[in-house]
View 1 (cartoon, rainbow, N blue to C red):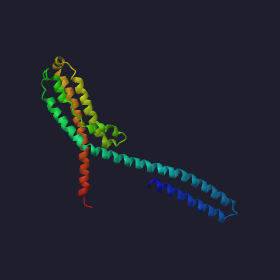
View 2 (tube, rainbow, N blue to C red):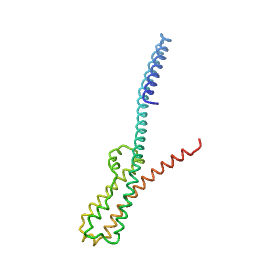
View 3 (cartoon, rainbow, N blue to C red):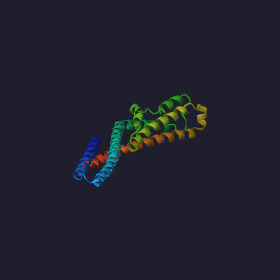
View 4 (cartoon, one colour):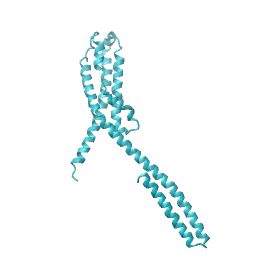
Length: 213
């Protein structure tokens, strides 16, 4: 039942019981026992209605909030599908840049430019949607938010490592490379989770469409 329906139902129940009990008292005007009994029953029923109607209203509002939250989460996720695939393309590009220097760091002249090329270009719609992800379904929006956060974290690592002097980086390049590669892989994993969610929803929609009635 909707909120207005519940209020109307509660009011009708209360009105019906009131009429019934008044009629009962009038039918037995000389019976004090009947009047006392009617008053007691009316009080109990009034308390029950007073408890039941607000409780039903609260449950109805909670269900409506959940439905709105689910709808909002689905709409937000659908709007970010393209951004996730663009971010995947960015991680593919960065992976090629990274593994081209797996065995040795780029030269000191191209050191800064190499880190510039390694930095991910995160789609603006994905970044601007992060505040909108508050109070959404975690199982729907969570992978999208994690992808954005991991991409920003990776860029933070890139910005930090580019400050490392080239002579120092050359000495411990294997360690530095593995740290960058590990963080890039975490970003790729989060993107894959978001894509898997999208594919799962698409498969369910196709199954529903193709299932005979």
